[in-house]
Length: 574
Ligand code: GLC
Image 1: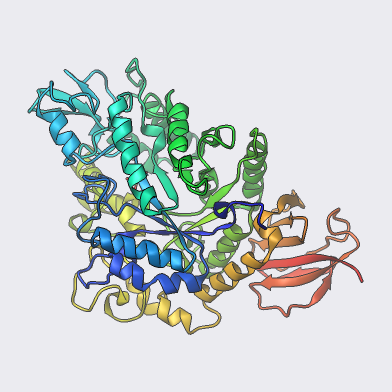
Image 2: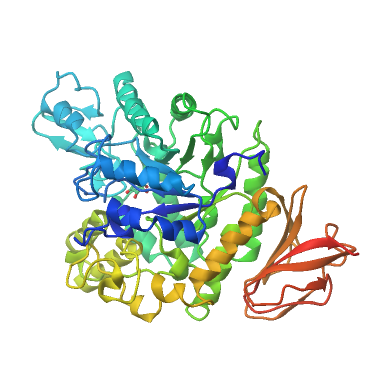
């Protein structure tokens, strides 16, 4: 399997540092905690970590508003702690990529403080300034995108919160400063970056106003209340039209090429993954990003076999069409998105569906990204007390619902809790001790711990239970590592009209495996004896969620249990 790069064979695990492990008992995660859990990660079987921002930040956007790009937030530890973390991770053969927020800084970053201090200081042109708001653009987090700075009697632009002013990427000094920060961590030995919100870096140079007859709160409300497909489509159109001049503007490909050149100054083994689903950011396959996420899969709502098939067909075809073949990258969740068990569950078979979705991630072609806590089946926790919300996007929305749209405060609180990303950022549940073992008892954690840590959704209980989700993940991860077909084999979709299940073959030079994922509560009887890749072969069972014996089966009369994950090697008959 040596012909592939490490980031093609790796399974990534996203650590959200605030919520992963609290080593000093102050209710907030930190490097001490992460270091203590490295053996856990190594035992789980992941190969690389994506660390969400660990930099100093006033935390208006939970770390995505950075006030110093080359340091560590004091609540997480020191630069020395970071170095220890990196060294210890590497010692366990775990690679580490960091989050790189290019579009904006914190409004407390010294660059911005200087820039806003007057209109003729050396950094006056580092952000996007205007004498009066030049258009009706909205920020996707907090209403008007132009905010007044009295110090220079001008307005600055921000795509996100007003505490996150957009950098002016047309200014070569901005690039230089940011590439220096990029090199700072690469020099320390990090293995790459996940690029935050790259689509937002440039704006339409004509500053064309949008033509949506609503503001941000109005469109959000419309999206929320949309019931019929037509209403949903209309609300979606408005969202797109509202931001179309602030997204995916010319200049991005050249910028990604420049960044790639910086990365390639190193040993050729560092990587970039973009928070975007646009495959064109992979450039010619060799000159922009190494990976972009398959977000269309994640955003499907309920995952149904026909849609997954369509998604794969489309994505893989487009990747294969790149001059140098691109590599897929799948994920079903992150710190911005609902938990797998909540999002794709049906409230009746959530446990089974969680296993099925884990298998989907780990058997589709491409690099999987898992989010911390999914391996124990953590669920969303809706916080309905607006004073307890930490996601300022949601507190802003609560305020608008009540004060602009006259929504009843109880309903507004529910809506804000549901849209808030706090629900999927609650502390990792390590045991059934108070606070889920995240922090000592009686310490108030930065977000409440989901009380379901008492019901077996915690690492310690699951570690001791051979049939737990955690052990299932471990087996599947181990199994994936041992299977060349799953790691690099081509994906061949089978039985394309099947409604209840997804069946595909993964085929490499060394191995062919059949994967069947039964998304239904029906028992299936399947026949693959006429399938081209399987004809004349037996099926040697390698992995099953139904705890089957690892026997050899014929390719017909194959019974698959409800929600079963079935993986077998296709072997010529003896
Ligand atoms: C990305 C991050 C999200 C953040 C936003 C602004 O989408 O994933 O958490 O709020 O960018 O930086």
